[in-house]
Length: 345
Ligand SMILES: *Cc1c(COP(=O)(O)O)cnc(C)c1O
Image (cartoon, rainbow, N blue to C red; front, side, top):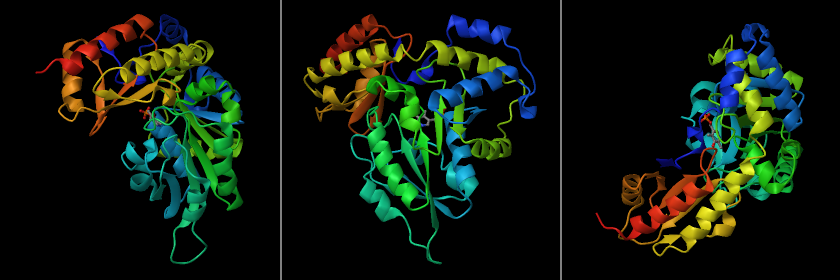
């Protein structure tokens, strides 16, 4: 099977298994797990923040960040195609009582600074208090678009001018950093908090980090406890995360090259549509232009060919390249796609 459904299907590397086996551990709720502590220091340094907190998932990282920035009834401004809005089970509202306000995501994953500014509420007893703006980099539903430091800064400047905080959902921030050729810390510089995943393209089995100031992380630690995220001897997991940060970032460039190769081939297949120039990282969202073929049907035909690609919208599918997928797999997937678009049921 060539599994292009997501970079979350990546398996831990042999070096990760080895590091997990050998990990020195302690009780992390007491702050005594040396491996977790080391991972947190490495993570904070990578994104240029004072401190970091290891959490169970990207969803938990975003939730804990929102709980730390916002109180009940506060408002968070977020893109209408953001993972935090679409795919996190409404956790900010369900658990934080946070009022979520969307502004349109542009096709390149950005928010227009003017839209954000217009969404910020004046101080008035009728309104929720605008507290937080959240951005996403790379932008999953916008085809893995990498937001530049300038694009992030433009929104952060508006938010900060009005006294709001900025959270960056950087689940794939290292993909953005590699694609743009800048350090992740540059992309996170204007964010008050940033989260990223170890368990996507970086291939660790479990875990995400929340990063920010010492003060923010101290409070986030309390909120992690509230959501049941205190994990005790979590060093066995953090050990894999350390390997992920040390060994798995630079190779993301291969995933990006493979995604571009796939996109360029898809653009040439009659009945499918994509602008390959929009593929900057490891996500390839393409359209089924032939109205007689549904994405679900194409996905079924591909499965029969040994290729897993999921439909994501009425007319679209999403393929994601990752560790374990080589150029030869992409070439095979392209051949399967060519056959699948023409072969009827
Ligand atoms: C995957 C993802 C998350 C959440 O991560 P989980 O570990 O699946 O909870 C958050 N934001 C973005 C942009 C993602 O792609």
